[in-house]
Image: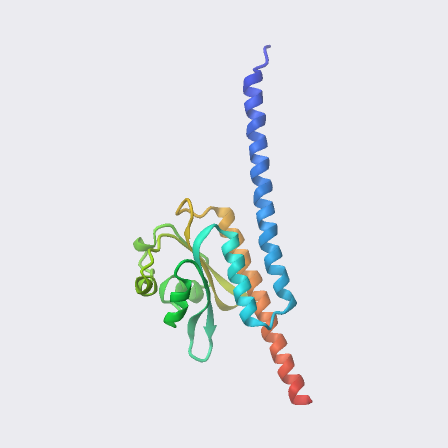
Length: 203
C-alpha cells in the first residue's frame, strides 16, 4: 500500500501548528498570572492593586479599552476605580457611578455572572451614558465579577476586542479566573486593613 507522504506531511504540519498555538496560549496565561501574583505582596495598597488588576485584565484579552468597577458599600454604587484605553482619562473624570443591575457591569455584579457580548448595541443591558459622554463607540464587551468567598466586590471589564468582536472560550475562562484572583487579593487586603485597625485600637 502506497504511503501518501504529502497527506502525512500536511497532517504533521497541522499538529505542529496546534502545538505552537497551545504553547502560546499557555505562555500568555502564565504572563497574566505573573502580573496578578505580585499584587499579593501588598494587597491593602488598593490604588496600586486596582491599577495592577486593570493591567492584568488588558493583558488577558487584546482589547482597546477596559474598566474596573468597585462597590461603594455605603452608597450601594459601582464606581470607576481604574480604566484603560483612548478615553480612559475622560471616563474617570466624569465621576459616573452605576447601580447594581444597571448596564453590563451592573448586571454582572448583581447576578454574579460573566457576560460576553459581541454586539453591544443589540443588547438591552448596554448602558450608553458613559460611552456617549466621551464619544466612544462600544462594539464588544467581556465582563467578569470580582468575587471573594461568595461576595461580589466589583467588576472587571474589557471593551472592543481587537481583530474580532467574538471572545473565544479560552479568553472567557481566563477572564473569569482573573475575576476570582482579583477577589482574593481585594478580600485579603480588606482583612489586612481590619487587622491593622484592630491592632491600632489595642495599642
